[in-house]
Length: 350
Ligand SMILES: [Zn+2]
Ligand SMILES: [Zn+2]
Image (tube, rainbow, N blue to C red; front, top):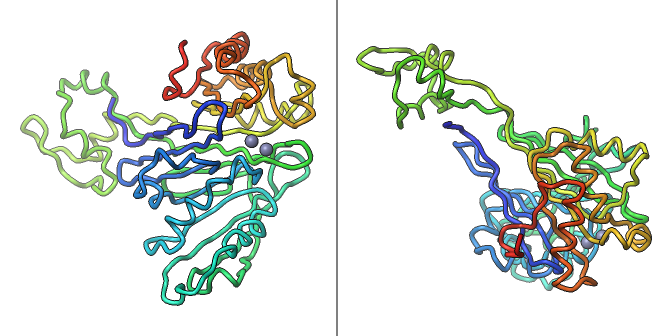
């Protein structure tokens, strides 16, 4: 089936080390790369050009293991001329990033391009965020001036809505702080229906591309089996709409089954195609997990089952576990949710 959009994603970092998520949302007309979290060495597997193409850097929170690699990101992007660098995170992100921007000697900056916009997702009464605070920083000012932007309410947790996708957020409890969960959702997409094509006696081929090309108007005529037919008619006959892909990223959080937080998170996740989720502690280490504000393998599996996500990818395993325990951890998740796996690049036997 020919479709116009997709979410291509890759977990960065190794098991037991810092992890992050690199994703590219491809509309068919343009590609939007994003990075979620930026721990130590996570950028090692990306080319410099890929780092410089990242439109949005989204932090779950600013514990060291999620922000240690920021210097590398900053080094490659501080004077990016093409478009602003957009950063997202929980409350205090603007202040903490400002310290990091200023912790270098700046003396050759006056003529440099570079525009940074840092956004904070602010908590509401429950897990739904209430508003967004933003501030701009300019490289040519050596990042000295914090220019606060008007805060804006955040409707239904949707922090960002572009022509290509929406980014929905949730404020998750993580010990005494908060971790932002992100869900990236493509807009509904138009696909060519193979049954309709067969029914009309038409052959698939590159000509179908015109049907999903948004730059071509409905009035455009296409020559099909010797007849001139308008795109409007062909689109009406041959295209079907399906929901776009979705991917959610949750890390460093703790919600207890049976609580209102749990139900809210289950509802928030419903319909998610791919969930990338922390799996920090083994099911037997509940006390430790609760003390540190993390999930256990069995709870991650249960959450995925109740939310009926399609697939679950496990990341962020605690360093306390030896390599031979990783498979057992995945099996603990699979008892609750069989469609759980590690990122393909981890090459842990299934
Ligand atoms: Zn962490
Ligand atoms: Zn943390």
